[in-house]
Image (tube, rainbow, N blue to C red):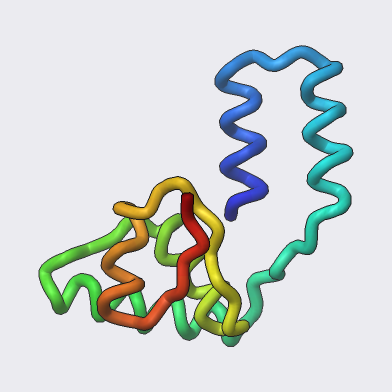
Amino acid sequence: MTYGELTQWVRLRLWGTQRQAKLAGWLSAQPVVNGDADVATVWGQLSARAVQDGRPRPANDSWIAACCLTYGLPLATFNVKDFAYYVDQHGLRLIAP
């Protein structure tokens, strides 16, 4: 999800080939957490619970949180407010400035 969001961000900002290549080089060295049945199950549980709590969350944020929670990983983000629900209700750990 995050990889896709970065791709979208670059395209919308009309980055040139040199900047795109630099980002691609950096991304190639980063680990990628693949979505699988376990992540999808956690995503479904998170999404349903958020709706039940009266706090529906964007699918992309729920998917990112599900990946981290499934694999016990902290989430590094500048968007602390977007993930506060998952921290408060599901124990997501954040690495933030």
